[in-house]
Picture 1: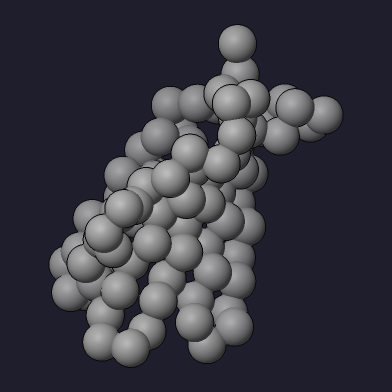
Picture 2 (picture 1 turned 180 degrees about the vertical axis):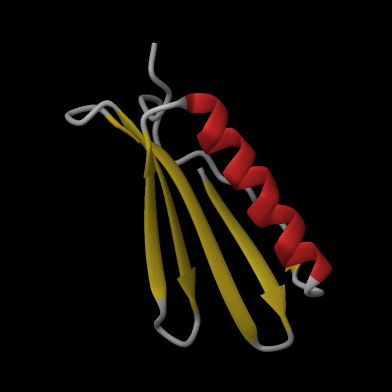
Length: 80
């Protein structure tokens, strides 16, 4: 899934997906200034907690979720 957050003319993109070959949950954060980070989790609970924490952090820093966000990027991101 892709979440877009906006603050003024800046955009932050949070991407969550499941990496089938490695069996890991992936969280990618991309900022409009070019900074990008990737975090990988073997455990869904830790992944979910990190996503929630990051979302709360963004909101506390006055980022707002963009209209139409989140968007599903693939039907297979979730581990069956």
